[in-house]
Image (tube, rainbow, N blue to C red; front, side):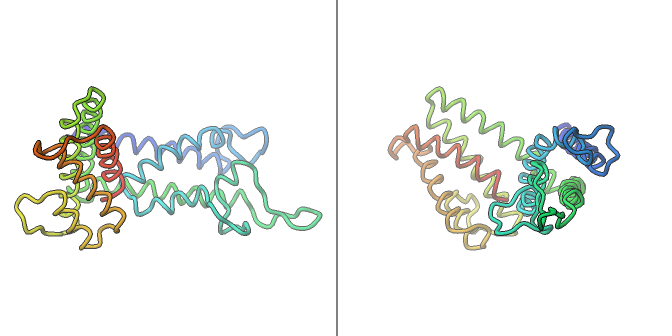
Amino acid sequence: MSRNIDKYKLDLDKLVKTGEKYFDGLLGTGPKTSATSPNISADFVLGYQKWYTEAYAVVKQLIPDRLRDFEEYYRLEKRKTIGADNYTIKDYLVGLSVTRGLAEIPVFDIHGVAILKFKQQLLILDSIQSRFESTLFDIEQLVLADLFDSELETAEELLKKGFLRASGNIAGVVLEKHLKGICDKHSIETSKSNPTISDLNYQLKTGSVYDIPNWRLVQRLGDIRNYCDHKKEREPTLDEVKDLVEGTKKIIKTIF
């Protein structure tokens, strides 16, 4: 267990330090600059996309409530006009500038705005480090996530080999454990000593932990799990078990 936690910490620390190196490049302290613009670090231009992809996954997994903020510093889908408040790092990377008049006078300092937006992303990522030390629950969740991933890999292998019931049973157990963990986190008590997926799902919907679409998804996954678990029920289909495995993967990555 401790090795897993140490690995998470080490990977996060490396990601933060890489981001700080790119940030120094934006400030003009980096060793190289882009040939197209003396103000943009070549390291930043070449490395940011890879860094963002990795950092996005970490934020999504560990602090999903900050994911939207993190993403919007990089890109925004809909904008009627572009100003300093909604200018993004993606705009900066493609060299988008905002000017006015025939003289093309810059409306704002795009370099300064990019620095500010990237700094906010770094602060969000850096805030995760304190969570490793905050509570035992957070650490246990990381270890459980690692365990669930391994179990779902086993379910996928069994599915490929045609063992539908076995695959579905493993995915169902993972889903049930995850839902029980969410109930514990939100201090939601269940009346049964051994609650089913349906029982847990009802409590989580009633407790406003998630919305109706997610409740319907979990209910369907629970039904498929029952097909896999009870021989008196009809045989599960290949597509149903695929849905159960993929749906479980989605739930454990997006609902906490």
